Length: 330
Picture 1: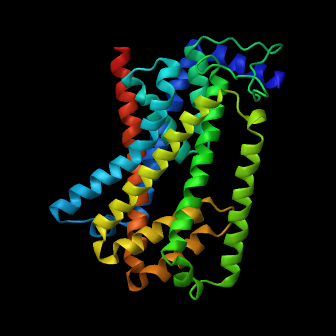
Picture 2: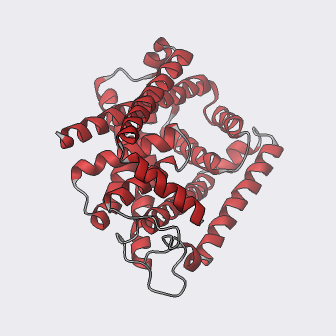
Picture 3: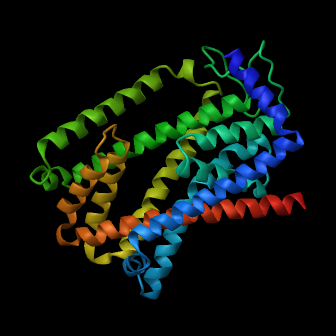
């Protein structure tokens, strides 16, 4: 651990040099180019014609689709900003930080955004990394916990854990809703038993993992209980509202599929996305075909189109964050 802290401290010192600043600018430009490249390649795979065809054309449907889509994209960075703003004394312009964090997580790899946010917070607070006295990121044990805002390591770690818990709990709620709406009977005869068995095992593992986290919260969490409950509430609300907006955009784009089918498909999509399985796309495609029948090709096209639009959202949010930073530095 001390070796890692020492390396991180040296990198931090180097980043303040002229060469470090130039390298940081180059990396920022390269990431922007990577995001735009991913967008262009995704559109080429789908084709502009297919992308335009699947989107709604009626005025009210167009308005509803774009409002829902923009809302479900922005709700993640806004929720993060709402959680951290009191702890770190953030301004509204600091929303750019969480736009970048969201884009990094979605376009690079999971928790890349948290790593960048941690480095930004440590630099902002002027923290010095002492290899002989590394910052504590362990749990609080039986103590009251570290006050939020004092230790960015604890802040980012605990918020990431509560985000994961909320992201795992909400699919469980939606799974129960789907079962209550008759998803089991609708899918039982159309999906291979082996896939259903794998899905059941995977979801059981997910539930057990969350139970283990809750029973060991004293060892995992560092912030006070109240702070983590508040963070969890924000994230659960974010996941719930974001999912509702996403389903709303589907309904606006393809109203002929039916609201009930979209609700069921949205619930099962959440569940499948959280399963530790290697064939998630196959399972979801089979599920979609079973639920919507002949409309399955249109549904698949809509999902692909929204994937492209999400990449476009990452590119736009990255550029917007850069514009905010440039204006603030001027």
